[in-house]
Figure (cartoon, rainbow, N blue to C red):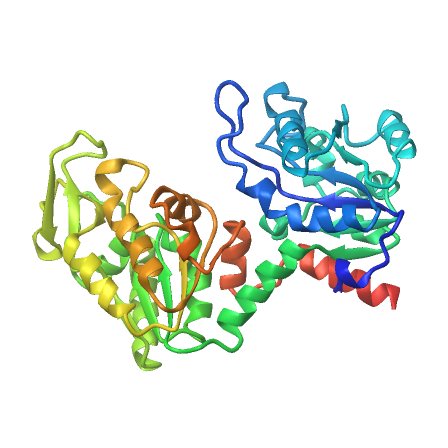
Length: 398
């Protein structure tokens, strides 16, 4: 794929696909602007080179309808403050009104289009819609790693119609870090996989068997592995149809000489409630009507020892129901373990990213990915559709 730094962008109209899907409170205030800050290096580079910036994103899930609460206008204000310049907010992302705004742009101007997902054609990857977006620009820039696993019009189809398609700095950085961790890692390479379901992480687990030296498992998905080893897990969430598959993954790991670590103790609760009765117990002693909510202190200590000699660590998924404070200690302890490590540490987006911010350890993690689903797709060994589209555009232009 072509890269923005190898492209003449002076005076050109650049269409930036970014991810400004930021969390908003009930008053439409942005609670966390890290996704906006993540693309500032690319946007500032374009401004420094005299380009005209047309910025596009989605926000929330409006399902193809105009939902005023999901307008990108709060993002326009924040972007203006961060760039220290006026950002013009369009009322739509296509149409005559948008074309007029683009035609009036001068080098150094910034225009933010309205939520792409207000149009159902965006998520359907429709060619006609993509063509209308591409009409606005001379160069298309994908700097939205977090949506590059989606086959959307502004991610995939647009590359067929834009005169030139390139990758921005954030997309390059995400791919380069992951390649560094997987293609030629410093070893031992440890994968920490948590979250609720084995089913959502199965592809990642099976692909990582070809790369890692150690696995650490946490979250509700660990229950399925524990059950496959014969432990009674009470009323804990278990994917019964995947118990055998979990056993197969552990067997393959053993055959390859990969160390596979599961919780040795847990924080259990009488019900799924932060105010429930709680106890820390070994996995052999879980009451039949209780449920596992977090890894226990002995497990946290074990996992810190497993990570002690690691040179590369990849983490995706929390260790427990960390959004409830009573069950957040295992995940927070894992964040501190990574922060204290001398390894290259890469944390997948989504809940894991939130946990790192909650523990106030962002400065001591090597790299925090902006994408949850896209990060997981890379862990599964897949090529992202957005990246494949840039590669294809490059082949077609050469």
